[in-house]
Image 1: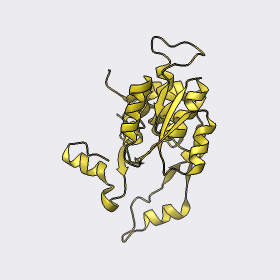
Image 2: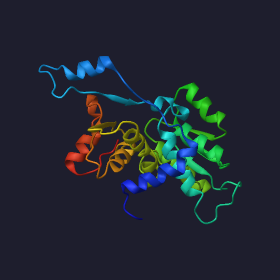
Image 3: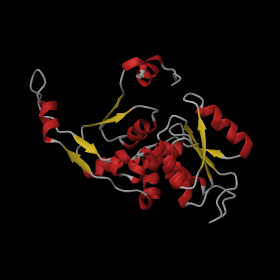
Image 4: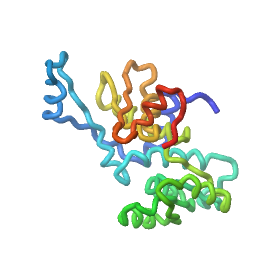
Length: 233
């Protein structure tokens, strides 16, 4: 596999542009004032911008990575146009994979925790996916079993190059919409959006920060980065 670069994100964005929304970027006068007036007044005055991925299809950025992963999958040898893949696609980033698979006529197996909200479950089923409920901490094991039984292709929610590149389109759009950005703050979580955003800023001089809560050890990304090892979630 070739190293991932900013150009890789640009190429991914071109692929998914017809399939996603270009979400707006907004600012807040109140939050700008709060950010610019800590104990000592900030110099220069800070201005915050927010990328409204809540207005994206399914209401989340994850559809970007799902669409890109499936579009790349369709380019692999053996793809039959309009026929889908008999092996299907497996994903636990639920609604995103379910929607992307449906629009490409690919059968999808979706694994989500049994504690998921009824609204989310109905939404996934509404996209025509086959739903499998898992425990809170055994989603990966359940997914691995489905892969073994059905031969489905697994599309993880973040640990996948094509997913990362699709998520990176968020950072690209911000750079186009707000010229001369100084920095982008991205949620850390599983790392897909953060790593894609970092790639999108490669060579631009824009600093990228990952943010996550430290309550009850949720700052696993920070601790893993400092230790140089991946920590289990």
